[in-house]
Image (cartoon, rainbow, N blue to C red; front, side):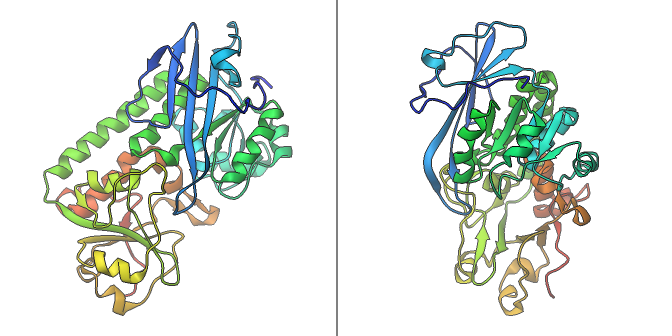
Length: 382
């Protein structure tokens, strides 16, 4: 391996804050970067959240030591005992989630990807490389832990690993024991959508693309502020984002980053609750509960590309958003022939584009551009 890890972290690896000059992050809460004596220490910490539920297992913690190639390596003792050593810039990257690919794309380093989850990449060029076998397939993190034979064959410097469930957590020490440094990516745990964008800066530090990463994050932040200002100039309108889960179950956005997007679009979400990093952004509720709190919403995002269809007109007619034609779907920017959806890739680190759709949805006077990810629904029965 071009980079090397220290092996599985010690069970009692220190988790106290590491002292040094902190590299400020505007919004990230799940990682912290400190500079000291020619190297950097990155602490990542978050819980694994069950889908639509709560934190499971113990909180996960990882300490990384980023040392430029050719520089002396600090002793991995004391505060650094059990930490993972990574030589930077990394040149061979493995990834188990689509939005990692979006991060490498905006930094211009997709050519460094040697392994990804599979053939569902939204980027045509990358998908072609995967199908040809040039880039290995290790499996997507939401299905299972990485496939070890393919991962080893790819010879990555690092594995960018989303920890979708406890199976991935259990696989992490085995991967590290093989000499492959693991960088946990806790994007879904960020309570602020701009915290997700800050992960581009972390990838920039790993890959020697800091200037590009800083410029990207600054651009997104400028766009977000302009959209928030425009939305604030309009009357507040109520909105629900609740997609049908089959049976008598709906999944409304309630908290964290997704709820903040609705709020920053000057939308009032009747289901909103306080943010909680130990809970998912949505909970399952019944049709009765959806009716009790959602019927007077001005607009309704009622499905994405994978939602179950809902065709009960008697129920739909009870909702103001249905009667007045403000029904939207999160199904833009997709390539069905490739089973590829940019909503789960680039949109994760381009909240400005998603926020733009929400602003235009809620405030017709601001519809100066086409919809991108969230667009008027065309499938609900009339």
